[in-house]
Image 1: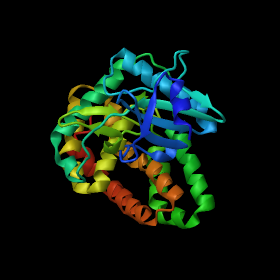
Image 2: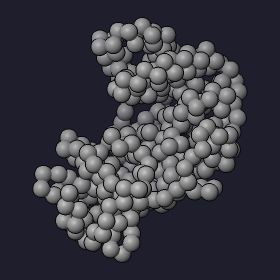
Image 3: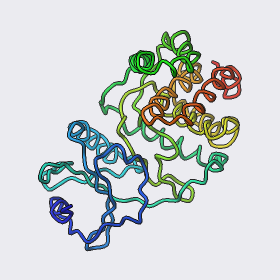
Length: 309
């Protein structure tokens, strides 16, 4: 790969690739990803962009850059060229580059027992809401997504449709009729999409699903990810502290909090889709058990988290 020619388009002098650096985030969302060092010693993350994703990647890069310009400090946008482009083309491929941010790896699942993480995630979400005011992006219909996913699984994976019949019944009977206020969301917020410092979030990554969603979508996704580590973690540490702080700050409308347990269950559909795509039978079985546990205990969770108005 001609790294020098690619990086030259940003005015960067290439020195070497750093394969020893383990990069955070999902490598599947780009065609190529590597840590590269410049002649001046700076380290960047270079990503190859799938052709079908070019326009979406441009829009995401602009959105994240705007968030930083507005004052959000936990973002590190892709670099622009002198011409103001976020993507460059070299031969037949397209590329993006962003600063590398080092962090402290999470100790799983013990990280979720630490309340301070709930405090800093809450502050990030409050800041994201503040600095995204007036920032338009694609709206996401969770109902349309869930209907499409259900129909696809019923058609292509009848075995899994049978296994998850209780989940699909819940989506149809208890969630599909809800009308929840929308808000600007990261779209895939969970503990592994944050780069952590000693007592802070240094950067939030993987903004591929950014846009307008049910206003507690990020909270529901993150809390649900904590719970699949160990369901007991829903009752102490990061998760309840996050919810407590956001409720105190008036982060969402009462109706959103009232139906927070339902949203938390519904967002697991995205993870179900992920395990199906990867044919990960172990996670599919774990997910089935976890979703069943959430459905069975949603009233207890609603009461524990003080979600009732």
